[in-house]
Each structure stands twice: as structure tokens, then as C-alpha cells.
Image 1 (cartoon, rainbow, N blue to C red):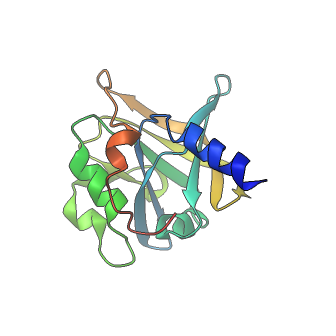
Image 2 (image 1 turned 30 degrees about the vertical axis):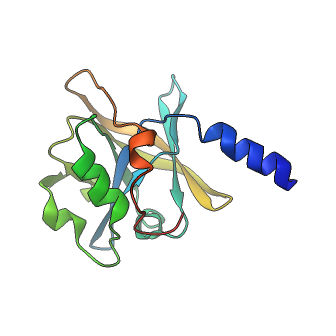
Length: 164
């Protein structure tokens, strides 16, 4: 791909204002979680949802050994959670020591404050460039209130815990 195409494409998709999510995993007795912007519903029936994790972060490494992933829809006022899971790295701190959570299916951590969330069983995964795609089949879903999401344009100011 030429630099002009890649640059124009990056400018174009940089204008999108995705809802930011926190994903959580548990594998091998360890927990991980990170802020995610690359995510979308992929099917209505059966219900499927895809997330993409940077292949450089700890949550990705744990997800490769996990069977389930927790997906939390951040509300507009959840900036502190976005900062904890987006600007800190689990390689250096235990993010879960700083937030209330309970274990969900297969031990996937569920953030107590996030009332709009689901846990998905990983049904497929594959590399997609510098990120890894995980396709999830929901096994638990909770929708407690109408969501006004935490948008990407507010997450842009965060210094990532790991380079994407």
C-alpha cells in the first residue's frame, strides 16, 4: 500500500468516534485487561462480537490461553476506568487491585461498576496485522441501563501503557 493511501486511510478512520470498551481475561491464574477501540458486532443470529487486541500487550498474551473474554461498555463518565485500563500496563501493576470486580464465567473478571457488559466464549481467533482478532459468542450478557458510551476522541489523550 502506498504511503498516500495508508496516510489518507489513517486520516479517514481517525475521524471515527468508536465506543471504547474494557476487555478482561483470566488464564493460568493471571488476570489481564485493556482498553479496546477495535470492536464490533459481527452477527445477529447467532450473536457474535469481535474484538481486536494489540499483539504487544499483556491482555493479548493472556487471551491466547483463555477460553472467555469479558467485554465492558464504558459509560461517558468512566474516564478513570479508561485511564486505568488504557494508560497503565499489567506488566507493571495489578489493575484489578485498583477496581472492584467479581469472577465471571471461566474466571473472566467482571468490573462491578460496568453494568453494561457481556462475557463471550472465544470461538475463533487469528492475526490481523499488528492486532489479533477474537470472535466471541456471548454466554452472559447484562444490560442494566441506557448507555452513553465513552468515545474514542476522549481516549486519544491517554498515553498507552503499551505501544499499539
